[in-house]
Image 1 (cartoon, rainbow, N blue to C red):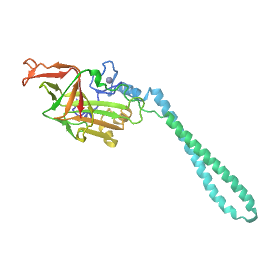
Image 2 (cartoon, rainbow, N blue to C red; image 1 turned 180 degrees about the vertical axis):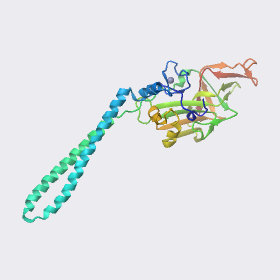
Image 3 (cartoon, rainbow, N blue to C red; image 1 turned 90 degrees about the vertical axis):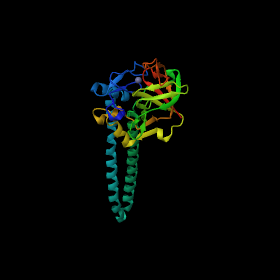
Image 4 (tube, rainbow, N blue to C red; image 1 turned 120 degrees about the vertical axis):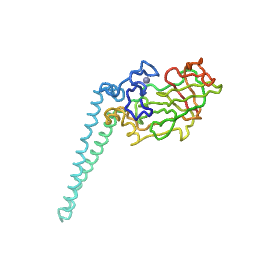
Length: 306
Ligand SMILES: [Zn+2]
């Protein structure tokens, strides 16, 4: 597993909270969450069903939105009539027949406006139908509730070697990511991920909590300074997510996000480590440099405190 998530295809995605998971790794929010591998057609279909609904519903939505395209024909008729009336103008100079021509022109004008109104109404109906049948992605059904992890300890990040952030454009010791969709049903998070280089959190009483390299969860509380966050959207996000699936063109359906928010941790930052800790066996009774050493039981959940 790479340290920057998008450098490698995502192995698995939790269908409930949309967390990126390693192969065979249970979801750390709830091991009962269903997880789908992204490198198999069956797994990708499971993700598509979670995001867009079952295959039959997706097919029906495609057909219904495609049916609206017929609206263009009315426009062609309208243009034809418009050109015809341009020719009518030449008849107006025909002397004594002017009154009759005037009546004909009035009738044509009424017909013209009737067609215009019918065309406009048709267009509005088509737009309404498209909007009604357009599928909107469904985001994560569950958000990450840090309070469920119980007690937390707070300290300062200490680290020797930083790693690249999610985009690789900044250095950090850990990052947490949420990819969001603007027009979604339910939740708007369509993917979340987090990685850490090995680092430690020094508590005020001298104890140390070690965070090993690998998957973590990172959130922020309070104002996040510019250097500790990244926002990725547009083509940069497409490029970043492009390596997600074996077939790059599928990622937009699997993770239909418009923007990604990244929170980063660096040496000196204040962080909370949530949840139960376990003592690390260091060979000298759980002490390293004279201080007791701990580690999160399972994946570390971290909050950057502004
Ligand atoms: Zn999950």
